[in-house]
Length: 210
Image (cartoon, rainbow, N blue to C red; front, side, top):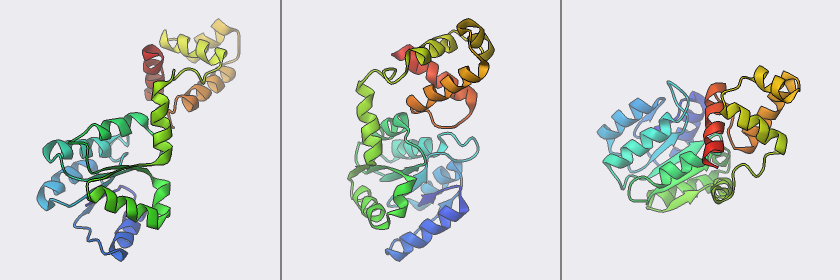
């Protein structure tokens, strides 16, 4: 069963899987339909995007986790546009730990590797994108070690609830400079483009945990 909101990619995956002898019993474009249809079709494996309607945050991942709560041995291969360590960790902790895959969407273009990963997951194995593995290994380190001293100052002020203007006045710099520092913080903390407020909150949580 396939869940992907992009019609172009969804149709492409259907054709690709069909060429390799796999039957797509259902292809859907949102997480809620995925959960409902999976109950009806009991697929051998679910392939799903992470970000799906309506919020385009992590609906696909949460749907996969929900399905594995109901059926712990259900193989799930998750596709993500960006490396999200917390998403990978949540998926790897789901079910009985077997039959899990987490790949970046770029890997789909490497057809033979993608199909091999699909087979591995369907047979109960675990496949994690090499780039995701590298990011997961970094979890043991101080997540703030990559920040410059100035970026740490900016993040500390964000944690105090300061606006960009207030931070600029405190540090005697321009708001444009503050915005540049915040962009650097997001990049170094592995927070990909998303809702701006959400990313600020995630950055603060990372700061507080560290």
